[in-house]
Image (cartoon, rainbow, N blue to C red; front, side, top):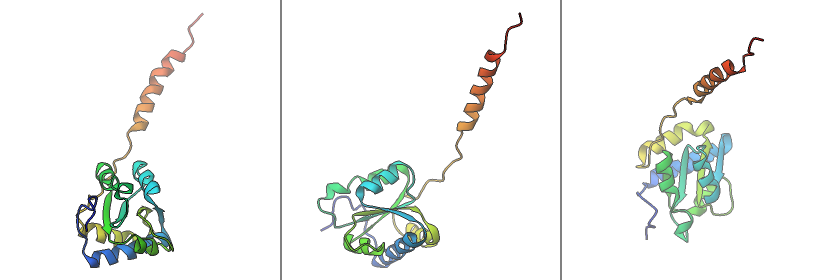
Length: 150
């Protein structure tokens, strides 16, 4: 039975590639594991790819993650087993979700998985515009600091 939060089916060959990519990311990059850590990573804008297990019970634990990924523009995928998801990153216990923060050597494999699934493609990140606003504020403050002639 398919869970309500699983938005699309992932072929077995892509699932195997996903496990390999996660293993590489764990070895050479940085990953966050568990629904709470994944949620924080997405909200903070650190996650570049998210994988959710399809056999989580109760499903309320992870059902917000795909919607959050879509809102934040983070690519995501599903795998059928939380036990296999945990094993892919070297854990001996099941894992409900994983967020890749630093792809490391797995960037090529992750891009391949993203291109094969129907998840949201990540949005390109624009350069921040905040420094210009700070410079304008400094210019406005400087004239006020000038001393008046006596």
